[in-house]
Length: 454
Image (cartoon, rainbow, N blue to C red):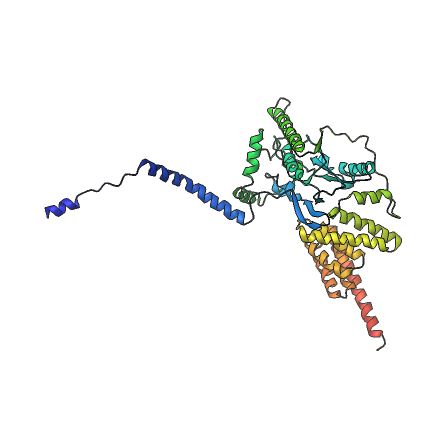
């Protein structure tokens, strides 16, 4: 009995871990949270978050190479502080590799370089395109304007870095207006500090899927309707003459411009730097266009508009519409121009999913203009939900005609009835068309009933 008591009362000391094992255990314990974060990051990336939309995307093969799109999503990716109302860039398409007889000029900068808020044909790139083509008629001149509204010089550097892979002959850079309030500016809501490495770290940080998921949750329900875009971009409304942010902005502009020059030179591209201020006092106005025919000025504007873009489809449509209204119809050459534009529109719709509706809209309108009503219907229906106000009214008018011309009066009646109920300020126009449709259907029914049997 005493022997058992001695055995029961014996205390066994736990094994002592070696220093190496203790270090390994501590390291593993500290890495577990990072492993968990990594797994969440991978899961969110699998769901489509993380990284950035590229500024350029290859759409598919065309004669001479691959068609490349300069997409809006790439420019919008720089607006981490206000993603719901990001700056914009224009849509351009071009062929890669660059054709042999082609001179490619890239324009980079802010809204002043883009030409905002003027129409595209009044931008600096439109003037430069026409002037260079006149001076260099034996070559095909291509001016691609990558100017983006409300960005500072650091995003311009990023856009340029992507663009340099497409063999530009000349790069023109015009910036300096937005170093305070543009995104990544030192006094904007998208401020990322005043040092280059901090800007780069911020750009990387906001590429994480976890950060993007949190941003989506944080911005959900935010209302910005009562503030202008510039008011949204401003984190500070006043910067004093001796404020340290002035020196920080100048230093960042200097560093970013220097890096842009170095990267252009490394790719063998000539570079031209233009700095503020801007002055349009002596800019000559554009004269009136003659609508009796495509005047040389109008034709040059169409030629200067990059093909494989919604802008080109819009230019061709309205030009041909004027010709039809005045001449009473379209000739063979005009129909061929329309069909070339339609072919480009279908290519873009297939290879370029877009948040905008202009490509399908004007492809449908061009079909309509050519009397191809059955082909116009799917294009118009594809963009109908995105249309509002007078744009929706114009589209529905075309859609009603298409349905009537293809013997689908019931669907035409459905379009007008829906518009009369939900069109708000334009409901009366729908009701008037609905009344006309009822009269037209009654006339056709009477004609059918009174027709002699065959």
